[in-house]
Length: 563
Ligand code: GLC
Image (cartoon, rainbow, N blue to C red):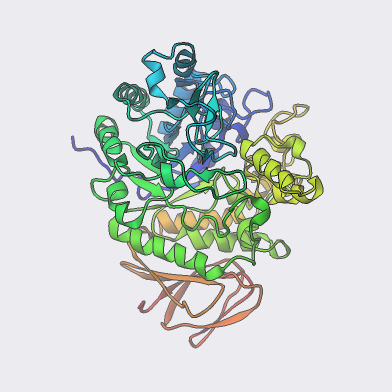
């Protein structure tokens, strides 16, 4: 029977951060049993694909993105029987599970690395990037979590790690290593997995000769992107991988593929692409982190048009090539409201507008847990509760640059990845129903959990949850579903600042118009309006072709004619 390669396209995807979704065994950490117990919640929301952040065995240096056994479940999350149960229960509900495939690096506690350390001449030593270098690291690359990308293991011997020093990079040049990875991928696909979200995959090829570069900071080091991202020759590895694994299964793959130049997009997600789809990060951060968080521009300070152009360019280009994956939030960012809108303007209606903005773009939407409840950052006030390795590094950099802890803490509260990693609030009981009363969750629950929680949201017909349900219905079951799925994307009304507006043209013609202005404004529409499909606020005003939008309002309209 022919393999259906497109089964995922008309589904809604949802990212679960397992540590924080639901604690099934009462130890304060979310787990697989917890997730299984909430499948009905996901089904009811309209979810058809669930991406689980890593649940493999891991020392949790980077929240599980440091794997010490690719074919086992970490006891924190349960065991293999729990995973099998989750897969079976999800299948009954027609939900397909994606695991996170972290194969640019593993953990330094992986037996391969342990053996490589002990026996420099072993086969396993060849799975990593060991180099001999007298008098300092082999080059001046800076790792993504700060400091040199090389760690010394005694004498002149170093290994490369683009992320933390507990995440040694795997050496894809080694055919034996590639064979091992293929085996593990097939192990999971044979279990009936829906596929994978593939982590940091554009980094697997390193620049020939591992050259140093001109320093870009006072530490004398250079960011490793230019030398380790989308490097020529990466396609050979990815083609081999696809042929040996994904091609042979009815699975989907969504790549975390930062930095892919437009001209290479076809290789990634074209008809014969390495992956089914991918996340594009060109517009996910309106600010650039630069040297550290203290150099970032806050909401309202970065250039709106640059951000908008990046979003439009991504949509326009991707639709020529394949089908993208769109997202507003994930486990690596603070909540979207905080990212895109100044604090003084935050409200559930603003979150609906942001949801509307991304949800009808062309591509499969990924909702990040809690986004559908309108969760916000919890306003961390102490670095002591932070778990995230990247946050700790940014905090260190800020202090090293002369900020006081009092100055650095608001940056943590604004940018930390832990903002999105706190427990999911299910109800207004102690711990938000995430973990049993009396148990201390691994990260604190949101101070607003008594009002912002799944139970309260589900009972609120005007809440963010209801808005998401309606967007999901429109995308999957309504007369507009086909248009939202396949319709052509085109930006419109570009003359207006602080406005994201686009048409989707297929069987029907839709216009999505989202204002990011804090003022009421009038927009002159260049088309007739047939129907209001959705509005983030109760009312909207249209007189002739003049649309009045209240601050941060979005509308989706069925229109007469797009242009
Ligand atoms: C990806 C993950 C992130 C992780 C990093 C290293 O970017 O999304 O959470 O820290 O890879 O594995």
